Length: 279
Ligand code: ZN
Image (cartoon, rainbow, N blue to C red; front, side, top):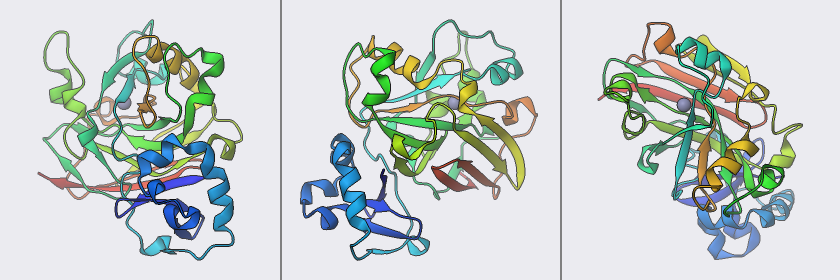
């Protein structure tokens, strides 16, 4: 298994207490780039094993991790992919994955601030699949073999911008700078008891708002990969936000306020801690 993260623009591997510079551990300077590391994900298992006998670069407690996938070519996001969230949004279950984009400039690290764009900014905790081996027309039966690993994300959403117009276009309301915290690491699939069944949760200002398991997804990661790759070529490092469960602020009549902390977590992957700040 491996846990791939980014620190000071360099790829690092994590164990539970320390980080290890990937290029130093492997002696291969090209692996300093996290995007190269993701494209060469098959090599990372051996590199992670080598960390057991390598000197750590430093303590995780002292490190501020950056974006684990800093320059994806594409960031897909799927709307209404949990039955419970479609119901709370009073929208029909989509016949195919309801897909929009979060432009890559919205991505930030696991402890970055989220800059509130207005009075109706909302949280959406999501499992994020990281493409490792690209391709076109990937069958769902082969899809997991094209995924380098899983990470956690927040699909932060300005509901006013997202829902303006008829039909509304979601992408811009979800693409303000800082609206895509991800991390803390890309975790390889063999670290999960079942990559189709991952528990995730979100607390805002200390209150549990969302809690679900990805076995409740309407369209599973393999189905989404099959759907997307039938339309466009997938590339190593592409991100797929898989949708959020029920419990968002829009259904509660309550949105993010300056100073509030968004604490997100997922089994095996870890946690995000993002403070909201006024623009
Ligand atoms: Zn979402």
